Image (tube, rainbow, N blue to C red):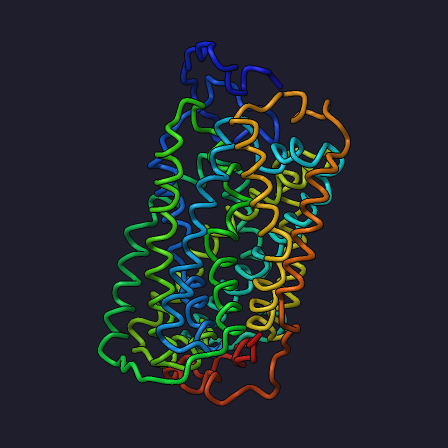
Length: 461
C-alpha cells in the first residue's frame, strides 16, 4: 500500500502517470492503486454501465411496476424519477479516482475502521442477493433451453445446471476489473439488437387503456423499486470500478457519463418492460411468462442471451462482494473471496430455483434492501464533499479511529426513517401457479419445461 495512490494535496503537482502492462488476472484487492496503474476514461466507465443494464432483469423491473398496481403514466413517472438516481451513482464514483481503492474501503473514512464492518456486511449480503437473483434467472433460462430441445430435467439435472453456471459466472470476476469492463462494453451492440427486436414485436400489439391510478403509497413503492433497481442500487459498486481512473479525470465528465450510460438505457428498457406487461400480464416471470406471447424463433436466442447477460451482470456483483468481504476484515485474497461468494451464491440460488419463489424473492429483496443503502449513499457522498475529495491514507488502511459516531448515528437515523416510510410486508408465492403465468402459453417445445417460476406472486406493497 502506498500513499501516492491518493490525490495529491491542493497546490501540489500530480506525479506523472506511467502506464504499465496489465496482468491477465488482477492482483489488487482493497489495496491502494498506484498512479502508474490508473487508466481509462469517464466515457469507458459510462459504457461499462450501459453494457451492465442492458439485461432482461431491467425489463422485469418495469413489468413489476404494472403488477404493483400503477397505471401507465404512473409507471412512466416512477421510472423517470427512479432513474434520476444514476446521478447518485456518478457522485459515488468520484471517490474511486480520489482514493484509488474500493467503495467499502473508502467507507472507513466516514464510519471508522470497525464501524465500517457493519455497513460492509450489509453490502455483502445485498451483493449476494443480487447474485442469487441472477443465478436463478440464468438457470431457469438454461432449463427452458433444454426443454426446447426436448430434454426434461429432473431435480438432479437442475442441480447440475445451477452448479455449472455458478462456476461459469465466477471466471470473469476472478480475472478482475479489466476483463469485466472490457466484456461489458463489447456486449452493448448485440444486447441492444435483441431488445430492439423485442420492442418491435411488442409495439404491434400494444394498446394503452386508461385505468384508475394506484394510490400514493403504491406509487411511492413503485418509485422505490425503480430507484433500488437502477442507479441507487448500484451506488455501492460505483467506486469499485472507477478506482482505476486517473485522479485527474474530470469530475463533471465522470458523473455525466455514468448518468448517461446508466439512466438512458435503463429507462428505455424499463419502459419496454411496462409495455410488455400491458401486452402479456405474466411478463414478471421472465422465462415462462415473458416469452409466452412471442414466436419460437425469438424465444431461443432470447433465452441464450439471458444466460450470457446474467453471467456478465453477476461478474460485477461477485467482484464487488469479494472486495467487500475483504473490507469487512476477512483476510483472504480477492480471488479467494470471489470463490467463497460463488459457493454461497450457488447454495442459496439452488434453493430459490427449486422452491419456485423467484418473483417473491425479487420483489421483497429490492424493497427491503433500500432501507440501508439509501441513507448510506447520502452519507458516502456528503463525506466525499466535506473532504473535498481528499482522503488520508491512514483512514483507509486501518490507522484511523475504530468508530465514527457521526457517520453511524446518521446511518441509524436514516434507516429508521426509511423503515417508517416502508408500508409493506414480505410477499409469498401463490401455489398452485396462476394459469396466466404458467408455461402452458409458451411455444409447444417450451410448454413441457417444468419451470419452478411458473407462478406469478403478488408483490404489491
